[in-house]
Length: 204
Image (cartoon, rainbow, N blue to C red; front, side, top):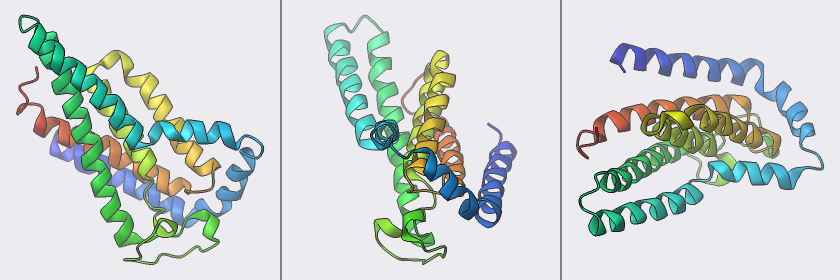
């Protein structure tokens, strides 16, 4: 992706997130929260799709399988490619996740359930870690990277990532602006890390 397109994508995502913060978030939050009443268990299940620890477990299992089979069947190029792709996806999810943690700490936006509409920069703690949404970031980073490695999975995974982001709003832990920025960072971070690491892993 050309640098101009990367910058444009980042600016558009940031602009929509800021517009949402000022004009949509606080009015929309209680309406979306009401949609989940009585179905909290279902929405918690959906939100776990974007939990990086579950992605990590899956990727470790896939990576180990590919690595072992590559040793047992060195004549089959598919197995080394499999564990390298698992490593690449892990690097994307981890890299974007670390970046998000730093941004959350700097911004310090209160979560919807706090009843506090302000920002508290450099405030440590989960209660002030609303912007951006880490679950949404991980879900979109995973979807984008897997989609680049296995194009047939791209759109189903993006649909799941979007549903994950929506679940964060339904559960009252994020605003729309948080989800928009999480999706932006996850998608963009996936492209940047993928383009940097793929040649180093000699993936075609």
